[in-house]
Length: 294
Image: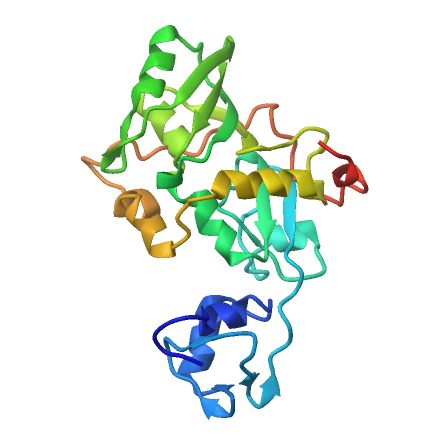
């Protein structure tokens, strides 16, 4: 093992086996429960596949096969791995191995979310500086105007920043299509609210080259080899560090602002979720949906 170069950081190495998160791995290391090649391991140690890692004296199992899932999240499902929270995404998907969502969709929203056990790909996809597209269909509480479309596309001041220019297209009297390359806290809802509109339904239909085509609400499928190949091509040169990901987004935009006077566009929970997103049900696997080529 090495503490300064080469290999993989120990907490990441442990988490990639699927037994726990990196934070939980850090806790185990701090408690002295982790040993590498028979010696107690400290924080910052790096290891390779040739090193013998044990936790409480038991050998660490091999890293599992990478898993990449496409899930059509219904309204009402919460994007958390905390199974103590009712309606969490892990219980909804019921995948037989440990996975976690890439990013999130808030509870009143629906549509596409990716889940994986591959921590490396997460920050590459999410980092705003990598400019990977996410596409949404949104309905609002009053007629969409040309002025609204133009202002949404140009950038809106929310959360101590101004949103990046984006693509916005009116698709109905009270609905529009929007393509973002960033993901601020409740961004679309806050943008619309700043301009005097309330979102009544919000559905994500695409992330990069992955779409919801053929996938019903509550269903999931595996990413196809062709899709994964294109993702890897699009991710070439993308930064993957968590620190870089967080630096791309102002602190207030990551955590959300405090409520109170003088705070821009706090946003309200919509009174109606509209018809765009079916109500949350039990969910289920999509059978062989993901086995078809795309």
